[in-house]
Image (cartoon, rainbow, N blue to C red; front, side, top):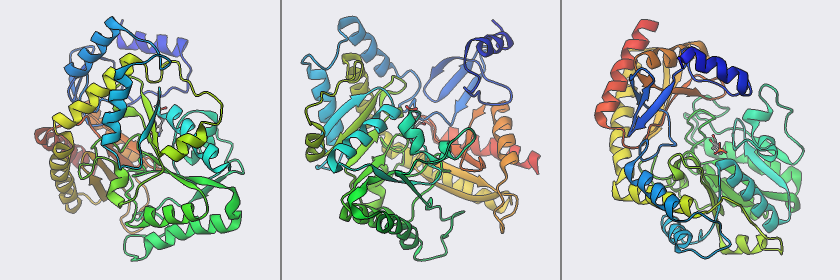
Length: 428
Ligand SMILES: Cc1ncc(COP(=O)(O)O)c(C=O)c1O
């Protein structure tokens, strides 16, 4: 089938609010490492798809899945060393207090479960969330995702959800030139707690680096202050590490470690299965015990043998291929190169990043910081024509998002920067 035929068939057969990337859609047929190949054999450098964390179709992960599929695939009601081994390996990457695992099939399911754990432990419902956050596609998660419930088709937040300012020091209410930006943003959380009374607070959830919010790095001490306030009010702190975990940020294995905090519940998804659907929640024993209230927890596919074999292979690959350090090395160089472009291109308002988690914020005017949304869309489409896959994010879709498979090399980074120079040059 031609690409046009595939597109027409899809329109006929699938829901129309499934979006398609790029004005000129890409029909992919194969992937390897940080490269994707279309139906005409064209190679694309994938600088966007964080799910293929250890690289598209990594042979070790493929083999682990194939072998286990041919041997046994059943559920958690039977004993297996695979799930024990995978849990032990995951727990070994986390601070000591986070030592009980649950497995599900997606980041959304993991966040749903995190909410249930938090509610069971605190016996409260009210949750504090960051503006523009996205935590998943279920009903409750749309309720806690301002990006969705305040966006097109959204119905706003329910009364149990309290939205606080996104601590964005480039575009937000308090900026990087204010020394006490962290305190000021944290004060919004204190206000919610004071207004709501302390007996109703279930907790606080945030991505350690809000990605949908525009590849945001929280001001230092913000999370520490918020976690203290939330815990003093009887709530628990949930870190959504779906995008930021597994060494992506280079300096640390988990995003929250950059801020020196330890959450009560950590939520994992996307990269941990390298494309195989795995979500996980890791928490403290006392929270897991509160959840054990007589109602069985069961996920038919969560923690099945194949998922555990694949999950273990992914984690071992991250560790043995030293991908965290690799991300730090490749990402720092690329970030530096991108920052240097600011003197050449006025449209680049900000470049931020850590490891292979980077954002380039495009603005029409550096003083007003008016978002250059159209230009960002155009850059992403032009880069696609140049054979490099990127995306946009942020409330105004003006942040170019770079979060490639982790095997991405310095040569790939150089190529990306070089192509970007050409595209931005043609734009201006
Ligand atoms: C931060 C974050 N949390 C949760 C999710 C939901 O994960 P999934 O799409 O696997 O359900 C996403 C997905 O984009 C995400 O970015």
